[in-house]
Image 1: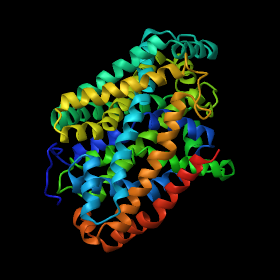
Image 2 (image 1 turned 180 degrees about the vertical axis):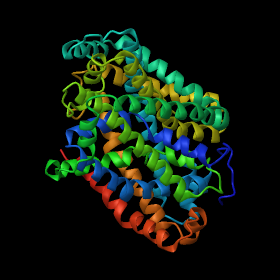
Image 3 (image 1 turned 120 degrees about the horizontal axis):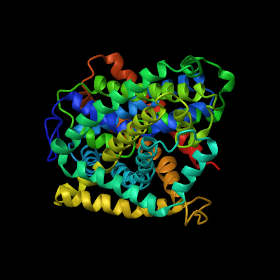
Length: 451
């Protein structure tokens, strides 16, 4: 097997299409919803610095390894790891990397679709002006009312899953490629528009200071682990999405430069989103550490209090919905690609994967209302799936990817595929992959298992 293979799924038209696709996979709710609120909870600038270091030390090396495996295998993660394990004479348990990625993606899509559906509802809510003159109580009631309505959540979940399936079913060129070419420029344009708006707000200076002023007294050990975990998961690593997209990467594209471009764009989106969110928060004298409710309960009130707030708020939630959509597509792709390799048409494969994931998502829908008191190991159905994927399957997959490429692939195979011209850079990458990344991700894994 060699890098000249194109595989049965096709290849991205060019390197920049892969960058847009991989960035679309990485940019999602984690960047625009989670990053601002965990930054607020962990003290601002010092946390951001630790996060950036973790991106370079742990995230980028593993991402390069995952893309390398995908491009060399030119198949779904399941079949890539089966063939790569045999080719490199590695222990057979490394085949589990592909399966864990597909299963993780399947589980994540089931609840990601439900959460992403909320953003669709908030596009309508903001556009309708329902938050005009709203206070925290009204915003809380709106959010609580939505969560308490299983029928509404089911409708939103269904709509979002259909949108995801439509793109995936059309294949690499007509579906994935055309999708990211539309969605990513739209996402960047909306983000630039919102950043320009943030520049005009009285809270812009405070937002910049909060995000980029270093105060290490606000950091804790937990903050470092949170930064490490988010730097890893924001790049969509360990779930097979990046490996699947790597399988469609042109053979002539530089692996190192391409992955660095994806990491840069993903981080840039998170930082700009943070500036936008905190500019609005500080302009209204709100609390930056408001937690997960920051986007759905705090921001609607803040937007409504600003000039043209309904319009800006609507654009913001469209931005979040598009980011979630681009990520969901990549999450489902590994399982769909494997079904195509098994002889199933892409349409039927998409129908099965998205349909079963939609069915599993009903448990998440009910977790917020009818089943809110039903727990497994002390967690709701949604909480259990989230814990299983985020704390066990994804970090374990990341460790195995780093160990497989760093310790079991031949230097010749790695060098041929990576095409890193500088021996110093190649040696640095291999050192990070062998020693730093597995330890860093291992800390996430161990911390996630601790009570």
